[in-house]
Length: 145
Image 1 (cartoon, rainbow, N blue to C red):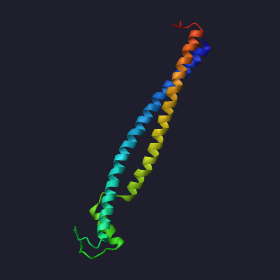
Image 2 (image 1 turned 90 degrees about the horizontal axis):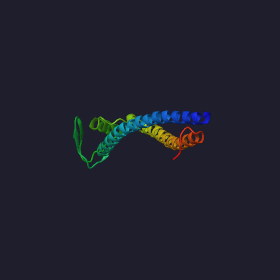
Image 3 (image 1 turned 60 degrees about the horizontal axis):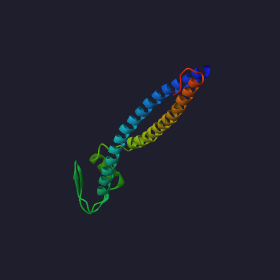
Image 4 (image 1 turned 60 degrees about the vertical axis):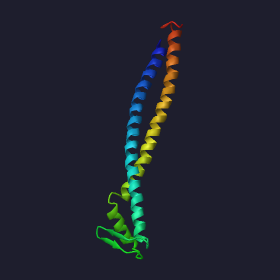
C-alpha cells in the first residue's frame, strides 16, 4: 500500500507541475506573439527607412519633403540621407529592432523549453497512471476488470 501511495503522490505532484508548466508555456507564447507583431512592424519601418535612404542617394530621384529638397542629379551624403530617412520614417528605431530580435530569441527559447517540459510530463503522467493502477490492483485496493 505504501508503494501505491508513493506512486500516487508522484502522479499528483507531476499533475501540479504540468498545470504550472502549461501556464508558463501559454504565457511565453503570448509574449512571443506580441513581440513578433512589434518586430514585424519595425521590419516594415526598416524597409521604408531603407527605401527613403536609397532615394536620397539616387541621382534619378527628386525629393521635396518637410524641408528636404533634392533635385535630380543630386546625391546626398550618408549623413544627409540618414536625416531624411529618419524624418520620412520617424517610427523606425534601429535599437528597438535589435531589442525585439533579442526578445524573440529569448521568448522562443522559453516557449520551446516549456513545450518540451509539458510533453515529457504528459508522458510521465501516462506511465504513472498505469503504475498506480497496477500497484492498486496488486495490493487489492481496486479490482481489475
